[in-house]
Length: 468
Image (cartoon, rainbow, N blue to C red; front, side, top):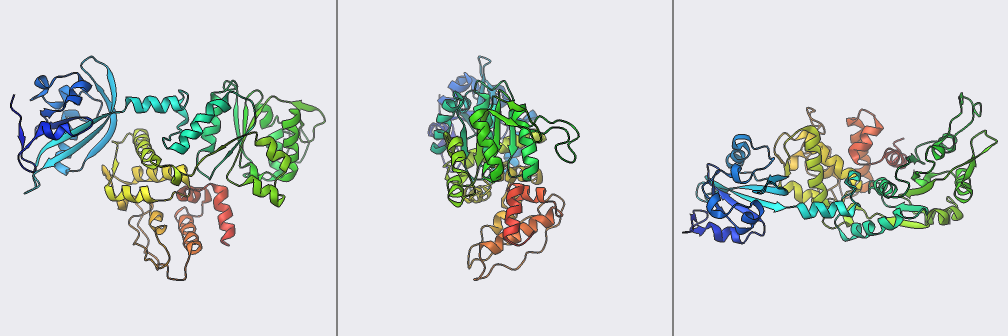
């Protein structure tokens, strides 16, 4: 059978073009009929070339894409913008195969007229299976990472799930310490019991003691009934103490006693409460430095640090940023019932170069913002949050004008004067926090979320910058 030439960019044979693509691929004409396929597509779909040529693509590439009456194909032809999304196809044997679809318009060089569509289907079934096996078959924890540093973390997690020793998880804010702790609990022998989480830095000392250990009626003003406390609620399960470095010294003594004796007194109580609880602690601080400063008990540090996991910041996880961007794009599109969007080359370049001081939490918030604000299929630079551009500014550089409003329907403010030679990061950070607080109308929780910070972290920065 003769090979069909393609008029882009000259007399090129389609089969030769497709042979160089390492995934199942096909070329469609303007009417979305198949004019060429490569052998990998024959293997993936189960349809031989002779039976696919000339057939409308939807009859061969039977998928769950939002492509009723060829609307997706037509959009690619009309706009010229590529589309990439994950979905499934049903092969000739009626088996479901998860694939990543990429559709690109083929245009004439002389007049940019669309003459067809290049369809590339990447089989992602092995990638999904690998991701699930990495999480011990439990994908619900949303731990995503394929970099070497994250693989090292995943490799030790099963070992930690099969022991009752205390664990200390360290890492910057937003790196997913709570997800790691919950995954270890869920895959341990205690997984059928409670996983109780409490932030040691979010409550004043007297309230924190009551939350952890409970109190008896009348122990203090407002104690109108007995309260069991988080340790009691976590009996036979796991208690996760996040920001353990913020725990006051008097409570550290009581926690050490619980770890040693598995018993404690409730506030105002006279009877010992016995519990069987595994303790997992987490902190973004260096506990060793706090021990040296006398802010953390050395004996408690060693008691908690029997096993340790350090989560690397996102900027050190090679390749994971792109994978996370794709994951959250699909996740938020599904939640909002929207068609999956993609980032333009310029927006993607900026996002991949950004340092993400708020780590995964910040990246997730950025994607959620873009999905909510951008009404197009392609998320461009101007659709990104404004503060990303403020953080691009260095000493002696001029800041680009803010590209977009911070919320849908809100008019952007006039840009302020650019930082001069004498200004530093502290000045830029102060302005960013003030902008976020103004946008959130003084609501610190919303401002912290916009900045990709925890509320306690924002409060600490505000005090450092004399804003509180």
